Image (cartoon, rainbow, N blue to C red; front, top):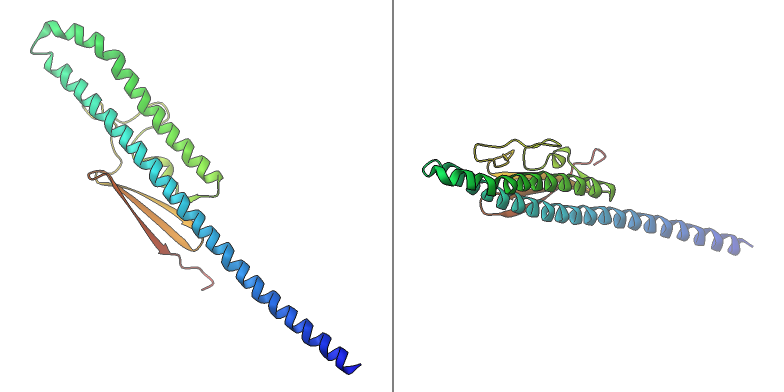
Length: 185
């Protein structure tokens, strides 16, 4: 009888130990899953941001060329009427496209948030200065950038802060993984 009781106690202790090890492994797997999810979110954000910056840069160049063409019509006044007729619609369409593209980017960021991507609030601002219906533009009708050299985005994945930077000049991005200081550590 004592042997059976002793055997049951040892098996119970062994089962509790295995349960503790399994629970610890499960927590580690969940933490890694959150970290990988954060890394995937950062990759998606980097791609979306690179596409946005590329689209806006191209349309900004076209708008600047149209504005330069408008200025050159001062030299040849007869071309002014023809040039205005041809470019007025194009200019308006490009400006509306830029606003639409910026709005789509913000919507994409909100959808990523719904997929449990923990983004910093500055991500929703976009790299360009704009409101819902209008954008801040310079003298050549280009949308102004918030920062001259780079755009930075922060995301959190598990115990990592994922910091992404996009550099306007060379059109490259850089991502850093920084360990978060957890209050319980």
